[in-house]
Every structure is written in C-alpha cells, then in structure tokens.
Amino acid sequence: MEHGTQDAGGHVGYAGDKSEIVKRLKRAEGQVRGIQRMVEDDTYCIDVLTQVSAATKALETVALQLLDDHLAHCVAEAAREGGDVADAKIREASAAIARLVRS
Image (tube, rainbow, N blue to C red; front, side, top):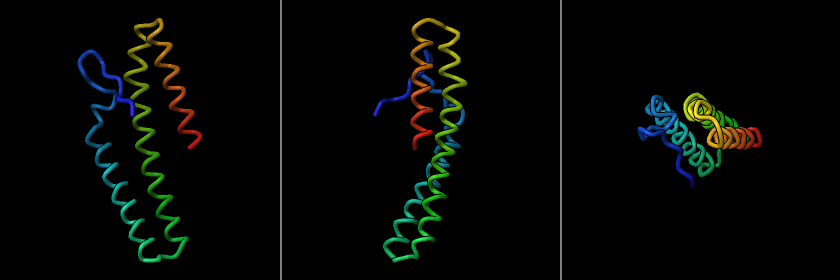
C-alpha cells in the first residue's frame, strides 16, 4: 500500500482531522466485528445486510473526508507550485475519485 504524500513539514492532508478519522474508523471496525458476530449467530439476512450498509456508509464517510482533506491540502499546495507536480496531483486525485465512484 502506498503511503500518503507529506508536505515539506512532514504533514499529511488529514493531519488536522486525524483524531476524528481514527474515531470513525474504530466505529466502523466495531460495526464489522458486529456483522461477523451476526453471521456466526445465524442472524436474519436482511438484518445483516442492513448492518453491512451502515458499515459501508461509515467507511464512505471516512473516504470522503480523506479526499476532501487531500484536495484542500495536497492538491491545492501542488496547484500553487504548478508544473508537473500539480499535474501529477490532479491525476492522482482524479484516479482516487474514480475508485470511490466505482466502489
């Protein structure tokens, strides 16, 4: 897995939202563990699917926050620099958006 790009100060775009993102990820992790227990306990399919939908929504919320932070920090900074760096960051962001839309 590729690590996020850091600015010259060693910061990633989501640094200011890190604790909130970690909290959301822990909540999603708990939801997934709950889904696993539901399957182990032979819970009704529709109830399991409802929880899968909730966990998916939680991860989508994290993904959108990360994308927003990336655009506001990393892409904006690269755009100020211009040139090949800006072009690469825009292509990278566009590819990330495409992956989110396909998922």
